[in-house]
Image (cartoon, rainbow, N blue to C red; front, side, top):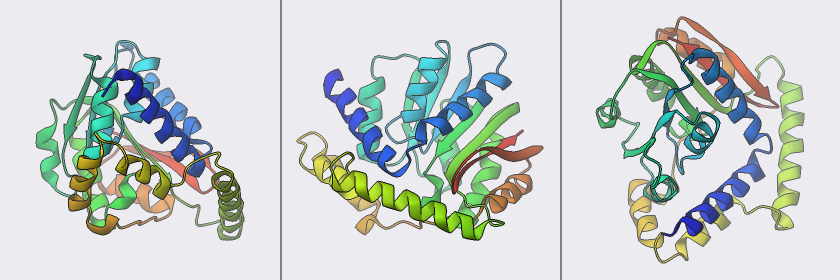
Amino acid sequence: MSAYTAAAWQESWDRQQEGYLPDREQRFTAMLDAVGAVTESGAPRVLDLAGGTGTISLRTLARFPRATTTVLDQDPVLLALARASLAEDSRATVVSADLGSPAWVEALPHTGFDAVLTATALHWLPGERVAALYAEIRSVLRPGGIFVNADYMPEESLPGLTKLLVARADAERAARQATGAALDWTAWWARVAGDEELAPLLAERERIYPGGSHTEWNPPAAWHLQALRDGGFSETGILWRGGADAAVIGLR
């Protein structure tokens, strides 16, 4: 895949994702602000967990020129795009592993990360696995390192307002997708199916995720904060909130 094609796929992925998450870049900025705060050297070592196309890594490397990143995911299509986008960047490593098993840690090139960052991904796992994963993530951080997870995490003390916020976001997304301002999830994957290089990987993806099934489990932010505490993090809290989405953070 050429660098031009890889960049175009990245742009396409970003536009599709922004159709669902208009404030997507704001959460990334909040994450990287936290990374900068805990990394005095200016050369953070970041694990882009369930990193897909390498979205977080690309932004990390642009903001911190001396950073190093590891993208870890299982999706063969998204990993192919990450590898193509980061192929010429010696600061980045891309690995395949299944977060459904504790063995994912063995795929890492090293541990002692300054930060583990993930966004809109861990809801694919069942709750008991996410809780166990948080403790595993802590084990690959250096003392003083951080973990940030951004996802749909409603504020349970505001059920009425959350319902209104979600309805507004749904209406905005429907309008953008109906006018072609953004592709929806299904349409984006249809484009992948029509690509000569990616279509064979899509077949592999469908073997890994039969029927495209996943958990889509979205507890409130309070659940995540308790799971982080149970996983051994010394400080936990909400780093960022946008509507019904939030980014929770844990400090080792």
